Structure formats: C-alpha cells, structure tokens
Length: 400
Ligand SMILES: Nc1nc2c(ncn2[C@@H]2O[C@H](COP(=O)(O)OP(=O)(O)OP(=O)(O)O)[C@@H](O)[C@H]2O)c(=O)[nH]1
Image (cartoon, rainbow, N blue to C red; front, side, top):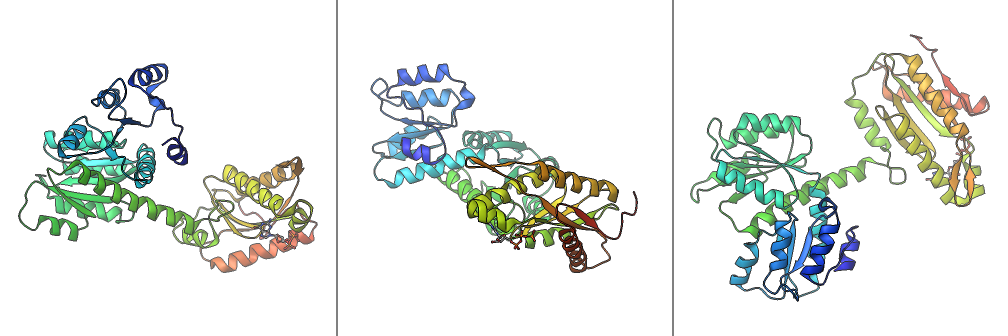
C-alpha cells in the first residue's frame, strides 16, 4: 500500500491502530492530508470505528475490507466514504492508485451542480465534496451560466431535469456554445424512469446520463470516467502542441495561435538562434546541450509570459513580442539577449555559457506569415554574419 501511494507521488503516513492514527492526525495540520485509507478492522477498532473517525475529520476516506456482502457494503457506504476496496486481488492496488490520482486532481477541478431542488442539490454537492472537487451549486439556469462563465476551472456540469425557467435541454445547448465535449463534461440527470429524456439530453449535448437515485458506485464511476476522458484529451492536446524537451509550444501550435491572434501596433516577430551551439554539444555532450536548451526555454517563459513563444526545432526559437510600441518590444528582446550573454548555466560540476542571435521584423498582419518569417530569417543570417550575440531588425523601428 505504501509503495502504491508513493507511485502516486504522495507520502504515506502509516498507522497500525486507531489510537496511533488519532495521535498522528492531531499532531499534523488536517490540510496536509489528501485522504485516509482505512481498514475496516483495526486491533482497537474492530467495527469500522477507524473509518468513522476519518469521515468525521472531513477526510475523503477510502475503506478497506477483506470481504463484502450486501450488508457490509451498505454498512461501509453508510459512513460516507469515497469508495471501498475489497482486498481480494492485486488489481485493487492499481485501482487505489487511480483513485488517489483522481482525488489529487479533483482538488483543482470545479464541478457545477444545477438542480432547482435544494435537497437533491445538497446531496449531490456533498457527494462531490467527498471526492475533493471544488463544488459550485446553482439553483437556476441563469445562475449556472453566470458561474460557468466566471469560473474557468469548471470541467464537469451535472444538470437535473427539474429546472423550471428553462429546460435542461436548452441549458445544455447553451453550455455547448462555449465548450465542446472535450473541454466540458455534462451529465444529465432525472428522477423519472420512463420516457425519452435520457436520449434527448444526450442528443442535445450531454456527455452522459444518470437516473436518480443511483447507487454510490455508479455515481462515482460515471463522474470519474467522464473526468478521465476530459483529462486524457487535455493531456493529448498538451503533448501534441508542445515541444517535448523544453515544454514550449511547438512550431505547429505557434502557427495555430497566430491565426487567432489580434495584432497590436508594436508587435515584433523574432527568430532566435543559439550561437555556436554545435561547440556546446562537442564540449559538454548532448545532455549538456539539452540542459542549455531547457535553460533558454525557462528564461523565455519568464521574460515573455504574455507573448507567443515556441521552439521551432533544433536550437532555434520563435517569439512574437506583443506591445503597442516596437521600440519597447525590441528593447525586451535585447534585454533577453544580454541576460543570455551574462548567464552561467550549471551543468554537472561545470557552468556553460552561450549567447544568442536574433533576427526581427515588425509583425504586420497584411503580409503572409511565411514572408515575415523569411525576412526575420534573413535578419538572423545578417546577425550571425555580424559576429553573433546581436539583434538585427528591418525595416528600422517605426514608432520609437
Ligand atoms: N543537445 C541538442 N543538440 C541539438 C538539438 N537539436 C539540434 N542540436 C544541435 O544543434 C547544433 C546546430 O549546429 P549548427 O547548425 O552548425 O549551428 P551552430 O553551431 O549553433 O552555429 P551558428 O548557428 O552558426 O552560430 C547541431 O550540433 C545539432 O546537433 C537538441 O535537441 N539537443
């Protein structure tokens, strides 16, 4: 169990009795704990008293049992646990690892609950809070839309079909105007067993559907599966859009961002290339070269947070520096060049120094981007010919 918890990048604090668990818990800050994993039977707590203690301490609690008949299942769920795990195969460790990972991610994941009846809305919110989500209740569609517009961390919406001013179907359609199924999961819900409501909600944009009341396990599985889908798509998108070594945007994603970009008067497009990088590789090995590329990428991220940046490949980077005045954009680029000149990059027991050359052009939306990049590349070539470690821009700055 300790190994599994370690694999989930968490630290296990192990106790072998309820008495010890109470002592440990009282010595630490409750916020420090992600959750409690508690065996139903402990030497000094033979009937789930340990589980009760963890739940009462507001810890998301995962119960462990050796076997589980229907009675026992009801008893364990009655404590208000996140889930239970029957210790009957090695698969349970993998399940536990996934569950811990989910609880960790949920700390930063918002869920909007739209339900006009207070009792069922509260019950849903309680269940979701147990799963560590940031929960946003809404009693009507207008409030729901307002919360969703103001809260970017919302990744899941639960919509009950008991809404009055507006149907659940039209509310879901509204959500879908701003977020597709890869960005926002929507689970429709109803108390009515008959009719075609589930099909209608799903055809109008719901990702999934639940009949209420539902078993705890079904609720958990639906929520987790829908969130896993959203997170996996986000991970695939991140991998497809970024450069593996440096984490910066890649060339393709840079172009994609440019097409959606609203230009400002002083924008400057620059190509930046590390000087004599082959020598860095020759002197310090490929790993040393990689370290320099990562260092440069980190500096770029710090200096150009609000701008568009990318690693174009090899030792070449591209930046679109956004400003109202070209002179200021240019100064920021040159300040970066000087910082690189002064930087000593630690690598093993040595330090590496490396300068950069830059070719820049004013970013003008009327010219094709390929043409602008070609001009920036010509200027970069001139900068290299001038002796490197410098910035060349044509035409000269307009609004200095
Ligand atoms: N470590 C490392 N090296 C890379 C990577 N991509 C390209 N390179 C190396 O970058 C070097 C680029 O060399 P050149 O194109 O000759 O340019 P340079 O030595 O920087 O010389 P100038 O650009 O003229 O200043 C080559 O040695 C490539 O192997 C990478 O991802 N990691």
